[in-house]
Amino acid sequence: MSYFNEKLGRILSPIILNGNTDIHYRDPAAIYHDGALHLFFTVNIPRNDSKSMVSFIGTTKSLDLVTWTPVRLLTTEDPSFNFSSPGNIIRYRDEWIMCLCSYPIPTLDGYIADDSARAFIMRSKNLETWSAPEVIKLKGPDVEISDMGRIIDPYIFEDKDEPGKWWCSYKQNGASFSYSYDLDKWTYKGRKEAGENICILVKDNEYHMFHCPGADGMGLMRSPNLKDWLDVVDENIMLGYRVWPWAAARLTAACVLDLRSEREIGKYLMFFHGTRSADPHEHIGECSLGLAWSDDLVDWDWPDKNC
Image (tube, rainbow, N blue to C red):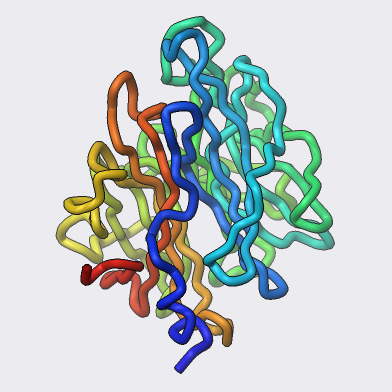
């Protein structure tokens, strides 16, 4: 029995961070390193009598998936950027790279980013302190930042067949794909019809892509080449959506880590967010972060599943 299975009984709730009317947690990204699980996410805080919001990148850390450190904010308040939606964290050369996006809401009313939303990266030596966000020109070096179009929810991953080639998938006209060999100069490659909050990992020599194709739950597709995709599941993965009051309005935004080879865990871990209410908007509807685990990416377990 793995260390993780021995400790499952200590995890009493699938909720990691419980949102309330004043603060909301969304869009998780995670990395497991040196026995610690580092979690990054969007923090939304209502402003102007809840007619709008300001967003930050937040972080917390755990050594046992039970106790989590106090949330720290990594970005400052600026509605013209509203940095949010960390996609994932990769190791590149001698530093950690986290991708994220801006989500600008410059007016006093509203919850949806305008067309100036773009993809960014932040850098770190230790997963604790991070550089200022740097915009990445995913449509190519000759395309001006102002002409790239609205981009949110980036996710960077290495090509399974060509080490050193990096892909970034992001939400623009479905799931768009660009590639780079240095994380600086990018080439746009194409798109696939898909939802938002994309997460891609490799299983059985195929890419497996989690995405959010509709209002509720996560879809899962697989591809040998990032061009030809087949659905893995017939229906969206809903976890405990139907019995979780804290996710009654929406459950979405899966971040999945392959930790099967880690002795302490030995599972796929999924982090996601659930929204209690869509009033006045799902972005500030008491959003909470949750945890589930699986052996095969299809069947999922979580604390209190059989209660």
